[in-house]
Each structure stands twice: as structure tokens, then as C-alpha cells.
Length: 473
Image: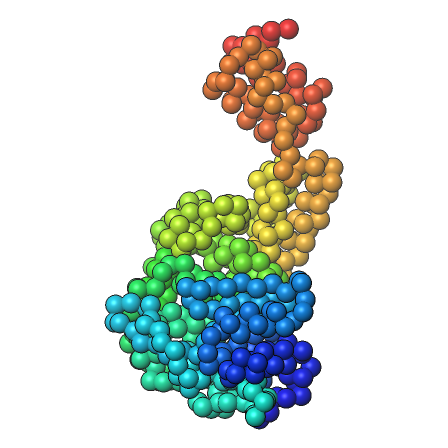
């Protein structure tokens, strides 16, 4: 298999080839770019391995490009360099071989041959190379028959899988990630090694694990990755809270849905509508507190009262443990988890403007994400029930738009501020000021007053009098 024609369509490859010949080193395109080229998947990231110094080759390629806008980064500690030309990123590294101690995933690295470099690759589909050398330019070098594994849609390690995963346990997460992204199966021997080696994931940092998990979450059908992680035992080790959702209890002939599989269905439903990682995380965590709130009521059956509030409180500890950001991304997820039942409740009952105002106020900028989550949360096997709920959601969304256009309540701030309240009654910051502020907010949401000074001032004077306060007019 030869890719000369394809390589000739991009001047970057000839630039690298000429620079390598100038340095008298052999260079190859390796890894994901080769895999994606064969799969006809778009890719802007190119990995170059040379039998020599990757840094020297990168520096010469940057110089030979003759362009002032060529961006070069050198990472001497890792022996790598990266060049950015237009929207292409080209990473350079010298061919190397690695050996590992049993208690560490940090390898002992030595210079090596192309064969050594291919041997240390994680999977056969990532161990292919294309020559950039004059004698065999464009020729595919596939020592582990990765092309066949691509055709069979198989993720398989090039060497004995126990050795591959013991050397670098993060590869276990990567096996699931590639299977999920490509919709491939994991080879039985490779999967058996996942089962037997899973405990070794403990030496990998939380950040690296979460990075791979996020890539699984961002795939087209993320539930597939979660099911693989669960089947091999990794999910229990990296995300035990999620595993608690599994299973169905029955009392007096009454059962409840399996919240593990329900959540995965919700996640897939969200994935069809949104590429946003944090909306997908909200789907993952929306029912996370159901195990802790599960109760059996003889009249009502199984209940999960308060799971949305407790779930919102669980978001920060989970994000902290996963090394996810504790910023507005976390607050977004927390808000969606806390509010995810609100639109569903509105769709079942007569919709009042005050209920719509309250939802607009509490959801704020998160409203679109919340509605995506709530629609995704309808997973009943009863098709008519699903259609009825979705029709009701359409009505809710129309009414929300009407109220928003008339009241401008999303992210609104009452014109009556704490400073105005203190000035009116001659107060310093105090409990009374807070009570009146909340009363003003609630009155606006309930439609009792307009969000104006003319409507608000008489209201706060009356509220102050209820607290024994006299306005300082």
C-alpha cells in the first residue's frame, strides 16, 4: 500500500522529507494520522518519527518552510518539538524504545529504531507508519497488520496485551476510548487483559484518566464506552458513584427502572443534540443521588424525593475527585442537575406565569442546556407517552419565550438594590436588608410588582413596615 499521491497533495510532507534528507536521517509519518488516512477520517494532527533527533528535524523544517508565521515549540525534557503551519500541527520525536518499572508508568527511554518505536505503540491500528524517505516514499510499513484490524474493526495491542497495559496502564482507558470513537470491538485477548490488569490503573493520575473519560463522553455514542468500562471493571475503580446507579429493587411486586442504563440513554440522547462536554456531564450526573434517596412507599411505590438537590450537592465533590474544573463549568452542571425536574413538572400541569418566571430566573443562561437535558430525560418505552411529554415541552418552551420577551427575567437583577434599601431605612448591612431583597425578588417573579423604581419603592416601604422599620424620607 503506497500513499505517494496523497502525500504529494500536502507540501508539508515533502518539506519534512527534504529536511530529513538534508540531515541524513530517516523520517516517517506514524500513528493516528496514518490510521485516520486509511479510515478516510479528517485529521489535522501529524506525528513524525525520525531515526535521530526529532528536535533538530523540527527546527530545520521550520527554517526551510521560509515562512515567518511558522510556529515552533521545543520540549527538550521530552525530546519532542511541534510545528504549527496554517491549521496543521506537526509533532516530531526521535525513534525510541522504552522499558518500565512495575511501580511506575514513567519509562526508561533510549534511542531506538523505527521497529523499536512501533513495538512500543499502544495498538496495531496506531502502529502503522508511512515512509518519507526517497527510497520508498509513501510506502506503508505495517508490521502488526493494523490494516486488517481496521477492516475487522478491532482494537488490539501489538505485543502481548498484559505487557502493553502493565507498561502503561492508561492504555486500558485508551483501548475503550478508541473502541468508542471508532465503533470498534476490543479483541478478546486484549479485553481479557483489561479485566486482569484493571487494578493497575491506580498508578495513573486522575487528570490523565479524566482526559480519556472526557474523550469517551464526547464520542458519538458515549454509552458504548461506559458499558465497556463497566464490563472490564474499570468504571468501578474510576467512577464508583456512577456504578451505584446499577440494579433494580422490587418490593411487593413493584420495581423501578435501572438508573444506570437510564442515565446512559439520557447521555446518548443529549449527545444527539449537543457536542457540549458539560451538558453531557449534566446528563451523567442528573440522577447521581437516586441511590441515596431511594425509598419504598406502599402507596406510591419507589420514590427518589430530593435527588435533584442532593445530586447538585454531589457535583462539586465528584468534580474535585475527577480533577474537573471548579469554575463556571461546574456551576453550569450543578444548576442543570438541580433544575432538571422543573420543566418536566411544568409540562404535566397548568403552567403559570410565575412558575415560568421562576424557571427563567433560576436557569438564566443555562436554559437551553436545561431543556436539552430535560427532553433527553424522557426515556419511556411507551412511545405515545414520550410524544405527549415532548409536545408539552414544546408548549413550555413557547410560553418561556413569551414570558422572557415580556419580562426580560433571564439573569435579571432587581432595580431595587441593597444600597437603596439601606438608604431608604437608614440601615447598615443586616438581616432585614436581606429579607427585603428576597421579598422584592419573589414579588417580581410572582408578578406582584414590576421591576421598576416606581413599582418597587412602595413595596419595600410596606415590607419594611412589617419588620418595624420606618423610612427616612
